[in-house]
Length: 191
Image (cartoon, rainbow, N blue to C red; front, top):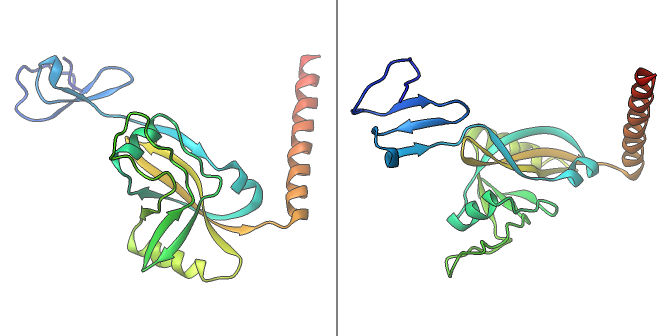
């Protein structure tokens, strides 16, 4: 085994990080069965595209989420829906509601409820800031995505203001105009 500093050792008395290409390992010993694989990077589970269409995103932040074991397994299988999701402030804490994480297929009586309230994990100053902004009129806390970052489940939460119907139409027209320009440029480059 090759350590990240380039040296090799037998019998690791402490934890050592081993570089083997694209995946980092945490090595407890030289025995193959003792190698623990840790995830690196980001894996998106679900996105709320409707929220970006229906709201102006004022600010977005990353927060942790308290989950049960079967919820984590269901998320790792890529199963979740954020369409009806929103966050509320209750007793000085931020709670995620309306997010659907289906029951884990191989779960037993310990399975979770698909649409239960889930606590979001934020720093105290972030919670105070969200409480202050949520008291403003016309502001909603909306989840934009659920993803795994270095093996931990995270939620991208946005402070959002609702769009009027004419704002939605204007956004769609801007997107269509950008597509038309890109299409014209690509055809021009082909000729």
